[in-house]
Amino acid sequence: MFVKICGITNPDDALAAVDAGARALGFIFVASSPRAVTPEQIEPWIGRIPPAVWKVGVFADETSESIERISARLSLDVAQLHGSETPERHPRGLRIWKAFRVAAPQANVPDYPAAEAILIDGIAYDWTRTAHFTRPLILAGGLDETNVAARIALSRPWGVDVSSGIESSPGRKNHAHMKKFIETVLRS
Image (cartoon, rainbow, N blue to C red; front, side, top):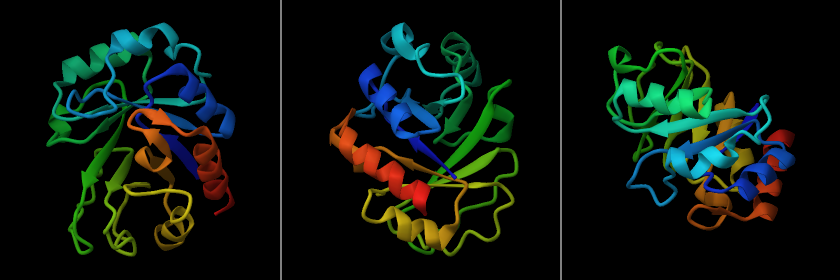
């Protein structure tokens, strides 16, 4: 199982996440997010992230051409798609993680064979409803060091994704909470 630390906005948080054991870092390219970054902001330091750590671009309803351009510029490994994208609109040359935001325990999350993995972002989701997926599952939404082990036990995900649950303020990670979160996941 791997941990993705999402909403990375600065090099100190990125390198602290890597040092704590994160396998993936998420960079949000959605302007409405309080954790949004631009390629210009992160280009000066993103190359300091070790090659073994996946660099994930988070997009919502962006054109495939724009995603491909940003990904090539920053050497991103994965495009995590949070909008209404369909397989026909996927960027080329990138691994795809398709995200579904859910608000109800019984929400119907479709299998999505066109993606490498499915990310479910939902605090209230019934995590026992994941057996039908043919793709690996990434658990997200409302996670912190106090609840992640129980949610892992229910869903047996491929990975977990955390952002606000380890922050001191939007876009600023609390390094002690981040380290404890990663340790908890890796023990689960």
